[in-house]
Length: 160
Image (tube, rainbow, N blue to C red; front, side, top):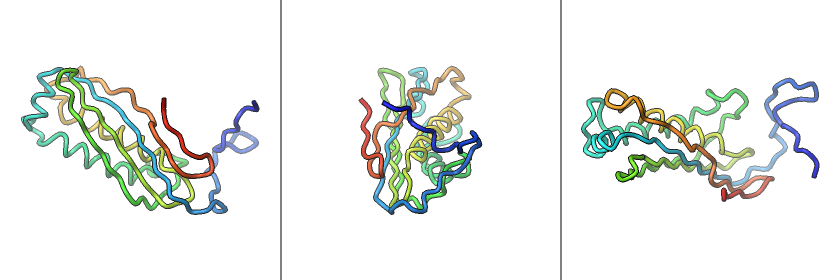
């Protein structure tokens, strides 16, 4: 099997934005997940809306949605996209002391929305950390990954 070529580098190795102008507009979606792990007492405060900064889950959800829409401003070679949907779900697991974050992004476009979904999850997790850091600086953010992608030339993907 031949090695895949990196599309964001030209033949001299210089960074470039991929030209997608000849690609057809198709329906595309991507879902990503991540996790914030914290002390059980911290999760209890979040669940009871007991943080001084306010409702951590809703602020984090909004931050994730906003981040997906601004991905091209954050990741240098991403195309600005007319996103049609961003959904961010947060699920608390009190026993494990975690908040599981899942973001799904959709677009009718010429390139995929994997980076937008990953950015939404990352910023949601970072915002949860920011909201609760006054009570738990030992929180960890991790396991951020693409779990699903549909549409486009490369076809569908589902993580194992």
